Image (cartoon, rainbow, N blue to C red; front, side, top):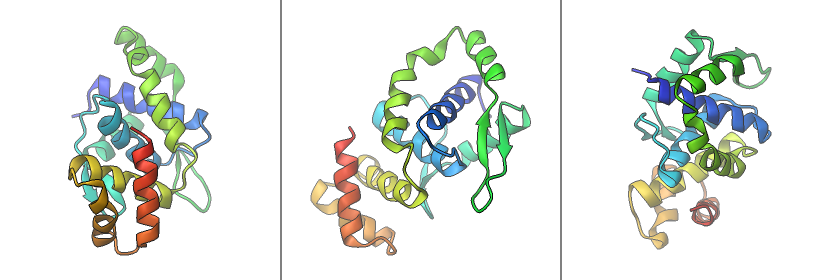
Length: 172
């Protein structure tokens, strides 16, 4: 079940991603929510698993569909790519007011993560989010992280995995 708090936080991620220059596809929201949950302790309720293209939440996927059904997120075609998810700011602001301005407590942390990931492409997001998963969820020592990334994601070269580990470690 998607809670009001979850919709507020995910909507805030979509809003900030757009402000940071992202085209705000589901992958961007998924990876940003994951990193915000892991590295900034954002109270995202959705659980994440390591999936085809890095950390993914089936719960968050359902929440995004729920938010679209409530017209809180609007799907806009993006030719050649997946759709852009655009926040209905009037509804989102009303939701924030009903939660007594809860978003302001998390705004800075969400902004930091969106600054870090907002302009990344999908391939970059996969590598960085996977590096954070390996470091923080699997809790592997830094020296073992790149090797684990290439083991679970054979299409990522060892050099790219090392770069992702370095970039992920620079964002704590």
